[in-house]
Length: 173
Image (cartoon, rainbow, N blue to C red; front, side, top):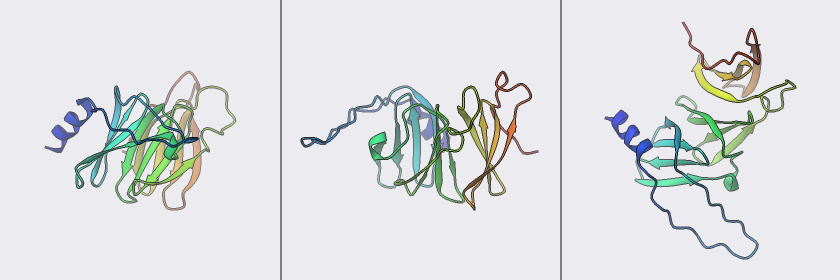
């Protein structure tokens, strides 16, 4: 039943949401929340990334919340997203290689190590996999590890023909 709810959530159009009035000198953000790209299920939320934004449906409060760069998110071109239950963190990756780690829906920490890597070519994050306290991050140039406890990046494994080959995922056997 949660799979059906998740599919309905992703496929449903987002209704127009009332905008708060902005004062003089304050910025207002208007992003399209159409065109779902990926979803992630959290403890009490379903998160949906679109072409130009992120929103979440809170199942306890029964409300829809939108997230914008104005609130501290790093971008709008989301390429991958995954929720890690043990640490209650949502990992959001962008086309640029930046990763936002969101704790409790509001505490945002931006990881720049992949975006800052001194390599030629794209640094796009394609997928996250979690295993034994490590996040395995599949990118266009290879695989990157991130220690969830220490919150530090570890090893980088380049694909055999990077950047021609892309690492699209990771599976622990």
